[in-house]
Image 1 (cartoon, rainbow, N blue to C red):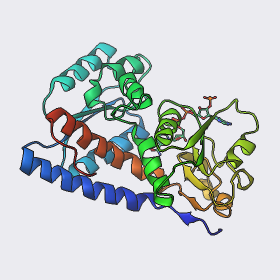
Image 2 (image 1 turned 30 degrees about the horizontal axis):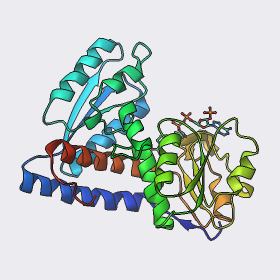
Image 3 (image 1 turned 180 degrees about the vertical axis):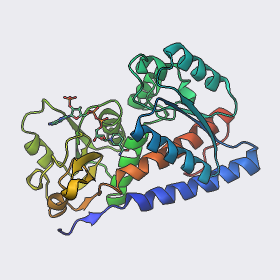
Image 4 (image 1 turned 90 degrees about the vertical axis):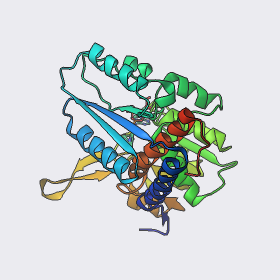
Length: 295
Ligand code: NDP
């Protein structure tokens, strides 16, 4: 391993959660409400079940209210839409998260667009995506927010940096690029049709890899001293028939060249739920009409 600073996502996520716990307690005593997050899970996707359990646990641990809705895999779209309508109308619910992926009979876009944009703590509603891209206050997708907070651990001021985002999904690539523009980076968004991806990536002072290809970004793609944020979560076969998680960046190689890098696991992953809780506090304050505490 080289000299790169390892950016500790677990530690930063714990700090964010601690600030949220203080804010949640304060909102209760000073303003008489508890931020509430409703999580809807349809079906029995094992990865989704793990995410939903962690979301619930951390919501409760930070002193917020958690509302669970688990529906069978064969749930009709109309039924799910009716549940979203009820949650939209429920004054105790400030944030609504419908866990993706949804079963085939349900149109995910239709469901996400049914969520009240004020309660859209995943930030996937077109209204929030539009507000983000026009620079208005918005609920911003959690993984992109977490990625930028991690980048700022290494370089508190991102102004003027060449940033290359690899991946253009609505969930990660596009919103993270928007946030980096707001931070005054010069942003390039690369994707599967990009010509000379290693050459493009080598220009970057800040690389955000959100591709879903195990260890695709190699040592010679990284400019010496660059900050590397690895969003990828890929499960690969390991010795002895076991599996392990790797990112989209070949960590050991990249760490020899980079100035700072996030590990997988322990980098972006833990920040995602912390930022979900942060969004829930933000949504609750906006809905209840009180100033947002420092979280
Ligand atoms: P998507 O599959 O939606 O998007 C992947 C993007 O990568 C696409 O824009 C695609 O390009 C691009 N891409 C694919 N192959 C290549 C290639 N060979 N060269 C260049 N670009 C390529 O994935 P997501 O954005 O949802 O997720 C990306 C990764 O982040 C995944 O590993 C996922 O597991 C992880 N993730 C982690 C989270 C966390 O909490 N840490 C949360 C969300 C995601 P094109 O558009 O041209 O097809």
